Image (cartoon, rainbow, N blue to C red):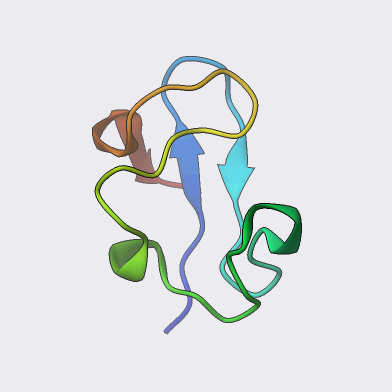
Length: 53
């Protein structure tokens, strides 16, 4: 099940259906499959700052 996650700092929502092609993250990439080094594309927050939307 593809679940979206929201940044606790800026509110950016990572949508796994869309991914982030501009950053090399393909569509249908689950949040849990993102590398631990991945950061919010809006504010740079660490992955750990995200919660299920």
